[in-house]
Image (cartoon, rainbow, N blue to C red; front, top):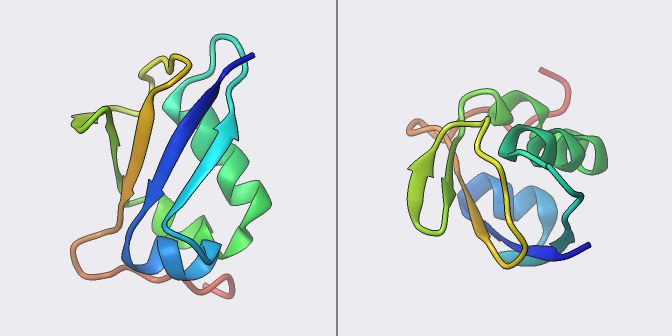
Length: 88
């Protein structure tokens, strides 16, 4: 099992408390699976995660993209900043 490097900006960074993390990668994992794991670990991301864009290795991608060990995954918040409140 490898790892991916996660990069966070704006509200994502505020909720997680840092701008980068290494995250364990399961075999066959997609960007969507990874996003679900993050929301499970950090529930404050739930609202904004629905509208955020994802980049893998500095290219915008859809959520079904398969991830590989060593990939860099960036989470781009909604343009308006989105709502990071776990209450909404």
